[in-house]
Image 1 (tube, rainbow, N blue to C red):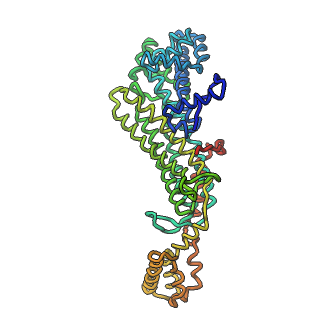
Image 2 (image 1 turned 90 degrees about the vertical axis):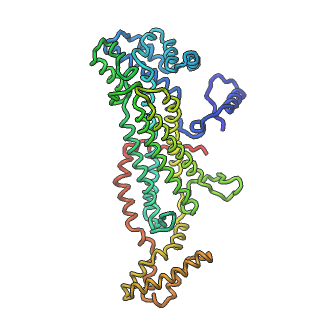
Image 3 (image 1 turned 180 degrees about the horizontal axis):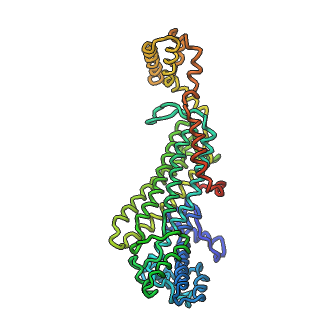
Length: 498
């Protein structure tokens, strides 16, 4: 798979092929090169990061000017006119010399803003741009994920509604248990995803801005700039926070915001990963039973050696990536636990990897799961056959009750059915035959008084309890209202890279 950077100075197809071939000589994270959406990839891109740094410097300058520092409209206009045109080559060269990414970009910004150069980053520490940009990326990342999660829930809700009444074998310990319905099982998946929506919304809404806090979080540099005026320092923090789109800033920080914030954010994503892994494992198990399958393209190949196979590769991908998402949770826990005093820099390299990868992985998982839930295939005849195979055993209690109502003795009937059940089980397990318990009951004169009731006693719909009603209530009261804020994004389709 060739992934080429868009360029305007390539003059021929040979140029394009040459540069694409060069890209094959370097490791490229499949999270970006193969899987993740453009919007999530951009959210953690250098372009987004460093243009956000420049916006934060502009916010700071505007607020400082409004509060009386000698900053001119011309300086701010100059900064605004160069907010997007970053010379990345110059920034890279500056960082090579200075070994400091923030100062490299201060110098690069100052180079194209000579008038504003003296006031760029005035009073700030590196974490003013670094941490605040991270918080913006986290917030925007949640805003990308939530509509995608809502679409998955919408598709699954439609599926649950369609199959609310279709009886199917329930399983406990992956052994046949009392019947449920296909729709009710989907609601078990939905229940977890509904919790994930609430968790992601809470994590997003709980985010605050680091704001304007200075080197160790004391705001000493800004207090000096404003000649000891505490009110102006507080107002500066508030103004920049609002410009960045946050309602609140953390009242106390060290040099960084507490790394427990990262724990809160990534734990919600890891929890989502657990939900998706469970759902897709269920789909894989049901695919083995040939009851439900994920979409399978007309020309898709399931196996290079076995042409007949229809592997659940989408669900397997979700499980594979979900494990990575869950495993990433260890990073913020370890990082938060070793932040000495006001901060230590051993968080930086780890967070450059773990934060983006968590959101990129969650993004990929949700896109793939949307594709799965939009095309789930149900095989009612297979489901019916499995029910017929197990239902006679499950119906024995109903048969006993019917005999008692017809005047029989419960203990005597229980023993009759026990013997017949063991015989039928031997046919199934030892001979590989079908479950013939019903035929044995029909041949036994003892059960003659209830033979006319057997069809009714073995109707699968009498074994599903209130499953259809539960589906209807759950969708109406918990699922549909939750989707209301996301209705505008509900029709978006995904392009799945296979």
